[in-house]
Every structure is written in structure tokens, then in C-alpha cells.
Length: 87
Image 1 (spheres, helix red, strand yellow):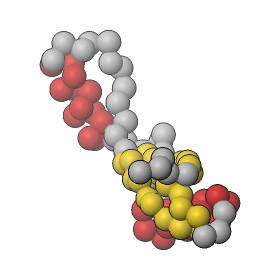
Image 2 (image 1 turned 90 degrees about the vertical axis):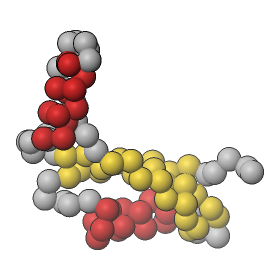
Image 3 (image 1 turned 180 degrees about the horizontal axis):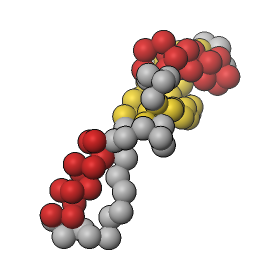
């Protein structure tokens, strides 16, 4: 078994309204960042896990996404897998 770190980014699908993103954009405009035209807010999840291979780790994290970490109706996700830096 090897140790892997998975980084999952969960974001709303493009066709889904993002009220939190609209609020952040309005706040940025109020602070003088008028050049901001769109903001989308999502989740960044870091998972430390053991698996036989990078492919096995990716498959397990994909299952986690489908079963708990995202709502497949309104959210997309991307997964990146890497080996952790030595301590």
C-alpha cells in the first residue's frame, strides 16, 4: 500500500445559479474590484488515503464523490492525485 493525497474541487455546474458567487462578486465590487465579472464558489477537499496504486486511489475518491462529497445533479468535480511530500 502507498500513501496518496487527493485534491477534489467541487463546483456548481455552469447552468446552476450561484447565489454565493453573486454575493462575493457584489462584495468585491463594493471594495473597488470593478473588473470582476463573475465569481463561482465551490469546495476544495483534501483527502489523505492509502491505496495499491494511483489508479486505485483515484477510483476510491471518485466513489467518495459520487456517494457523499458532491451532489451529482448540480455539481461537477475534478480529482488530482499526488504522493505526499516527505515529512
